[in-house]
Length: 326
Ligand code: HEC
Ligand code: HEC
Ligand code: HEC
Image (cartoon, rainbow, N blue to C red; front, side, top):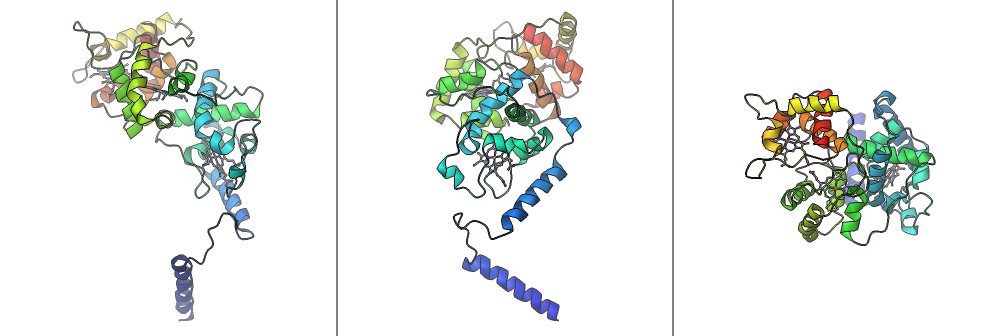
């Protein structure tokens, strides 16, 4: 009886706080004593419990992966965490909790913990989660950059770009690795992809951030520009002839239900093809894309998903070597 009465009283109190606005949500007032400690300890322990194990951390020492992460960090994270060596703005210092400057943000966490934080964000702090699902490969690129900040090897961030063309080229013309070249593709295909990233149909946190950083009415023009501008990023030639010839065999092998890769991606007599050009595309990009199609992270073209579904990691490496060298 008394318990029920107490519970009813507690509930009435809680309703009063919510309904009457008794709790002060002012950031200026800060948290009540002890609340910050409770929140921060909860955060730390929650990350420890949920982060992937250290064995799951991929190779992060790769210069192209670090450069890709840096390119994303420059627009997505700098507004809150600043660039290395930069002082926090007065407005960022007034946030509750205050976002730590980058050197401090990375100092107390290992790579696997940083991965969890960047993928999930932190509730009720302003720290956002990754804006696309299933894109561990992209989150690891950002972690590769964060890890580089702990040492001496962090690349300079490209912070000031006046024109969208320059901004897009800071990744597409320079980074290589899993960033595709665009000059082999048609303007119509490029524009369709930009719209697919924008709507989320093609889930990529990195490209979603990029397309929402430029005015939508510029996208068609950007697609035309990049279809016509030669990409000069350096690319190591594919030396592994044996792997490439295994890839060629796979590319010519269809099944009863699914045509061969070349039936859709090779040139036909009328010059049209069902799928985008892959010849001369970057190997790192092809490998990531084929893995996404195989694993169903990308599934918006059912036949493309079916074509990739049964590929092994080795098949993917071989196909990427073949098309990159074609
Ligand atoms: C809108 C502001 C905002 C943006 C944008 C943002 N963060 Fe944060 N981030 C925060 C805040 C606030 C915290 C502190 C949370 C806390 O201490 O409870 C935080 C915490 C972190 C931490 C944990 C550091 C620590 O010990 O508290 C890391 C790592 C981090 N952010 C990385 C990133 C990366 C990488 C990006 C870009 C992909 C990013 N953040 C984008 C606001 C932001
Ligand atoms: C931070 C680096 C970065 C920036 C900046 C960037 N991109 Fe990308 N872009 C990528 C990556 C990585 C991919 C592959 C994404 C995926 O997995 O689908 C990509 C994919 C694309 C594709 C799809 C190509 C294909 O073969 O399917 C187009 C088109 C594109 N980007 C155009 C642009 C344009 C236009 C801009 C400027 C508004 C831009 N990108 C800015 C890294 C970047
Ligand atoms: C039935 C036709 C078809 C077959 C067969 C097919 N693809 Fe595709 N593929 C497509 C289409 C269409 C897309 C683009 C989907 C979209 O963006 O709407 C695509 C996209 C891709 C991409 C991403 C390219 C980029 O620039 O974004 C890669 C890589 C790829 N395919 C490789 C392959 C390989 C390797 C095979 C054989 C194992 C294969 N495809 C078989 C139709 C096909």
